[in-house]
Each structure stands twice: as C-alpha cells, then as structure tokens.
Length: 154
Image (cartoon, rainbow, N blue to C red; front, side, top):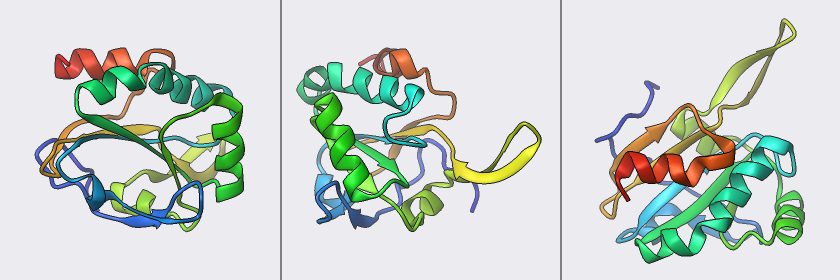
C-alpha cells in the first residue's frame, strides 16, 4: 500500500479498545480525530507523546477533536498505561497489526544493524468527513500538540 497523504480517505477500522470492546473509527464521523500510532506503552518517547496529548486534551476537545492512540500492545497493557498516566482517551489494542497495516505504520526498522518489524511513530489528523487533513511522519514526542496545532493553525 502506498503511504497515506492529506486528501486521502482515512481507512476505516474496527478494533479492540483498552476495555476489549470493539471501537469503530466510523463512530467518530462528524468529529475531527487525532489518530496517533506509537510503538510501546510506558516507554519514554511514547509516554511523553501520550502525556502531551493528555495535557492538551481539553483544548483539542474544545476544537472538536477526539484523540485515539494505536499500538500493538494488548488490552491489559493499555489499561495499566492509562491508569498510570491518567490518559482520558481511547487506546486501540492492535495486536494483530491490522490497523497498522491499513495506515502503513507496521514497518521494517533497524537498530544496531539488526532489522525487525515495528511501529512507525506517525500521527494522522482526520476531518469530520473522514478525510486526512495532515500526516506527521516526524513526531515531536514532547510537544506533539504544539506541532499539530501550528500545522493546522488550530
């Protein structure tokens, strides 16, 4: 699949949330969505990114946005992550990497010369009609809300 870009339709999915209940992206039609993909619960970069979005969540909601995180961690891991950092938004447990595949975020990575498959840290901003407004391939984990806001003039 070619990489998604602004103007493309956001791929629809239904996947388990942090409670193991089906979450359908389509249920947020009519709202703008910040859909962020992150590698692993409770790791430094992912925690910084999630907490930045948490700290600005009320601002995003006031502007008509909902925030949804996606990682390949399971339901129990998401529940612990949410409880530890008081995250107020939905986290998708994409253990089968189906959502990652739809968005092109399950990629080959390399560390110390070793190749492996993992999550590309990317964020997709979706408008009320389900169309991508913005795609962030280089995420500033400590100031992601500011990065998104300045890009959207939001």
